[in-house]
Image (cartoon, rainbow, N blue to C red; front, side, top):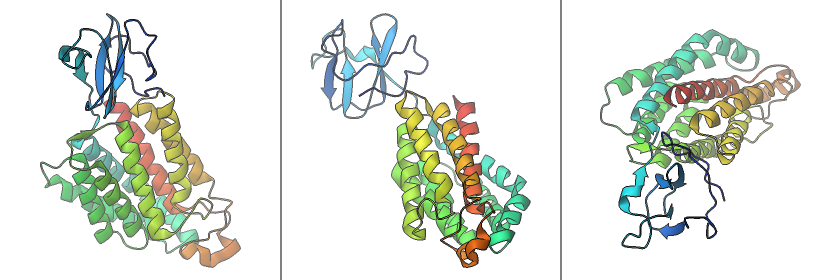
Length: 287
């Protein structure tokens, strides 16, 4: 198993497997550490530690591993400021695409998706401006509750539940890493599918969300950092939204149209792609 994230800001990071008996100097697997951490490896290289399992080396400490001075906490980029930027910039992006989203919805829905999403995210920004001292998980949870209450149609409950469950997954910590964000986004997708009973191919939010998470995870497993993983997710989400054009809708109001829903891009999938696009830009600025 390779550790996917480099030791940000440390010289010469290198990914090493957990099984390292042949390494020189030898590395030890140590249980009970709290990650992620960066451990210096020799003079110029470093490895990454994760919660519950750590790789250490060097001077023998109390447990026979690295001296405590060799263990350095890694940054947790998904903090409260990151989530605030994502939500604020998402609100701006949705406002800029309000008419486009409404036009998409006019073809196969109630012609109010852009209007409702704009109203909901504007309300979220206003609410979070007055909410101080909240961590990233609490911010997402609060944003989700506002979306449920302020966004009409199916979008409010779906996106609101997504944000709320993602926030609950992040928990009460002050910061999180790329792996934590991936788990939170998976929890958000599960909430959408639980509420909407949709799968890929139904011409819904899910058709952009599922490939986005697959792209995020693939990049992360290949050693990509948060910015690269989010960027890959954004590309996959856009492609997933476009792929809804030839689909026949099987869920929601669009399903009432049957074959007449073919040839139109799903507005919910399009909103999802916009959200992942903003996530990628925020992650890129935070790298």
